[in-house]
Image (cartoon, rainbow, N blue to C red; front, side):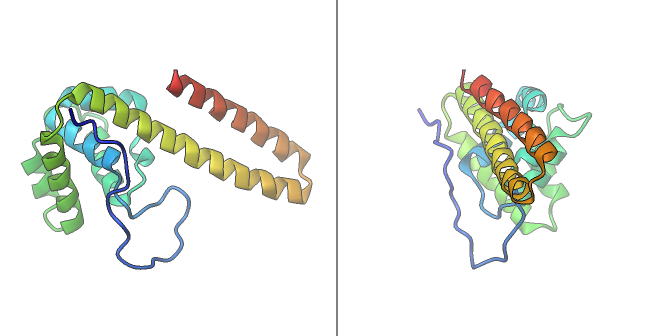
Length: 168
């Protein structure tokens, strides 16, 4: 009964320079499981394509792997070995693919885990977008740009509606 709570599993190796919002070097369990589940079952690739984009993955290496899995035309079975061979010169990608497959093997309810991980990735995307809009709002308020403030508030309202829809 492992539906692993999406948690941070890897700490940064060393202090890294500040990165733009949405860029992370840490690999989240939800992202790892999602990659493993998509590799194991092509139906999960098709379902994920309808809900998320590769850009929704916070870890840059996981994002690159997700791009390959979610690209147009993908959806057929893509064996992990084939993907590892594609990334053979990138040890971090090979490590993530291997960890993803190993962790997926321990999951009992794969469908439920897939849905949970998909929801986590969508919530993370919206959370990052909200944070970006809040920063933009502060800047617009400082500058007194009423038109920009109005547009940002409209965008924030849309994201809040998206969060409510995900949580239903």
